[in-house]
Length: 305
Ligand code: ZN
Image 1 (cartoon, rainbow, N blue to C red):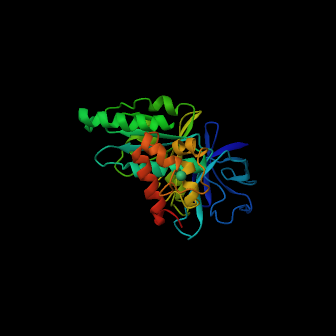
Image 2 (cartoon, rainbow, N blue to C red):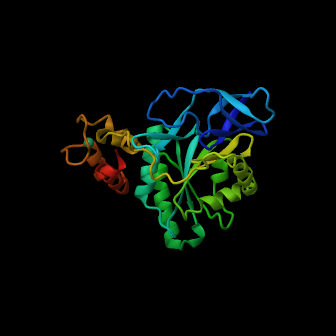
Image 3 (spheres, rainbow, N blue to C red):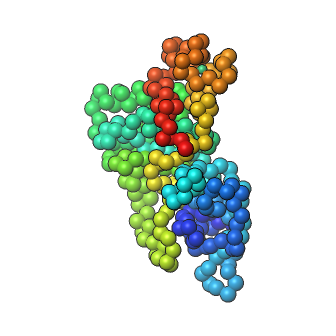
């Protein structure tokens, strides 16, 4: 029987098949192809499960289907290791706020670069528009237009006022990873989208009480049979680790569009004379804020290993 992994506690997995939920664990030991990945299965994985013979409520995962994509973060427990956060993601949404608290554009850009590296489409939802003056609303529009021009989906609204803008349309029929810094209203958004979520959470905690490690990294909630949200903790540690300095520009789509014309090999787009990115900056094809984010990522060694 095929099922989707919706929660992992390390050794036990909660899986969903049709409208039914089961607790399952791995049958035998799965070989990890990438030795630096600490967990063999993540939320979003499509797996084959079978009932453990002799039991009524114990299921075994016998096979993991091939993944369309995945996203990793640095392992919190093992240095130089990565933790598979989620797999088979259609898009990733960041809940951002212009104020209370302000989401920096650098933070948004780091998120988008990470997604580019994992080839996952990015969406930004600007929440808390109820707190904004006319002037601030105008500045949100400028920011949104800039990201839309680059190719990212943007929408705005106020969870408090039950106005989600285009978000419900954007998530329909898709599996969306949801993230946002604390205070962005991400949890309220989840409660709004899935009112019965609290009940589900308590059910899963029963499952976690089987004496297993309860630290979780992501959890999937279905809104209907083909729409799901994967709630994640902060994405601060999401991996820019694999990106080499001379590759970084390729993860900025607006840079990428110009790079074919660059005559420099391994150009860092900082001081090289005649660099197409610097020219793009002058002509306005590269937004100044994005270039600033680029420089800060390039300089910030903390973002890498
Ligand atoms: Zn250059």
